[in-house]
Image (cartoon, protein in one colour):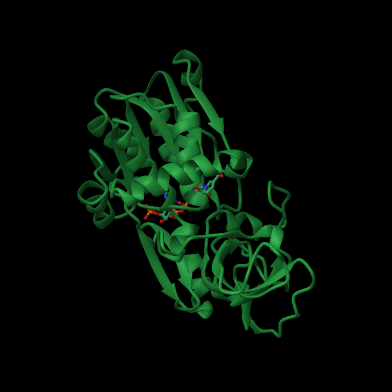
Amino acid sequence: GREIRLKSRPQGEPTRANFELTEVSLPEPAEGQLLVRNHFMSVDPYMRGRMNDAKSYVPPFQLGQALDGGAVGEVLRSRSPDFKEGDFVVGNGGWREYNVGDAKGYAKVDPKLAPLQAYLGVLGMPGHTAYVGLLDIGKPVKGETVFVSAAAGAVGGLVGQIARLKGCRVVGSAGSDEKVKHLREKLGFDEAFNYKSGPTAEALERTCPEGIDIYFDNVGGEQLEAAIGKMNNFGRIALCGAISQYNATTPPPGPRNLFLAVSRRLTLRGFIVSDHRDQFPTFLRDMSGWLREGKVSLEETVVDGIEQAPEAFIGLLRGQNTGKMVVRLASS
Ligand code: NDP
């Protein structure tokens, strides 16, 4: 099988030259391990942080070694009593076509409930992120206004759809007119705007006449400052990510209007989805129900072949995806 290694650490925007495709032979699974053939692997924004040699909530990738990340596939060989050959599983064996890993790191998925790649998106980590961030941190109340950035992405699209289900008025921003149309026409957003066509503060003036009660922040920077400027008293900001800054080589200035958090009694709370594992079963039950009832739609952008995984990752940071960006490594 083949795998992708980190050849050099990106300075600013990653390029193809930072990655290396290598052919490897696989070890036999040891006691307690599985050999898995990956069908889909995930590329996610947090991987950009792991490409830097910096301490964070996940350790950095190591130079000359395969990257890793979410992947879903089929068990080819099992040396664990909990799995058998032919089971479909999700785990952390991504950026490679086959993975040998501890059974403890894998969970079974049901391919009859949803297509396999859904377990990397709507029924996986990004879906869980949207669910926890909006419901636990945002605490939406019917009739409130929710603003979400990177709204046409994996997490953002689900935040908007869940907020609609909870009876909120939903406003989203995205980086192209096609994405804006998609938000309004396909995902049921009440309002959407292209953040590249003008200052976000002006767009929020227009689209949130009654102010913002919840801002789900995926991007940081200008949009965060503009959202703070339009928050209602006692509003909540779920700090989920700051993708506008992931390629930055020097730290950008913070929001200049943070005193409004005092005067308007705002709550700003950062969160990391992996701290909320205990909630995963509730999330999965709710989200798979909404999916089955057609209340939430499965959005994805699929790139084919492990050799294209670096392009998929670079494309994700440039906004080439609508919905979850995944790489198909094999077909079922
Ligand atoms: P997305 O599917 O949203 O893909 C990333 C999107 O970010 C792109 O499609 C692009 O859309 C947008 N983007 C890129 N550059 C900029 C920019 N400069 N300004 C504004 N938008 C930009 O990814 P995910 O849904 O997986 O992740 C969304 C956010 O959630 C990220 O910040 C990520 O780090 C965070 N996250 C946090 C987790 C947690 O536990 N806290 C867990 C999972 C994700 P466009 O065309 O609109 O620009």
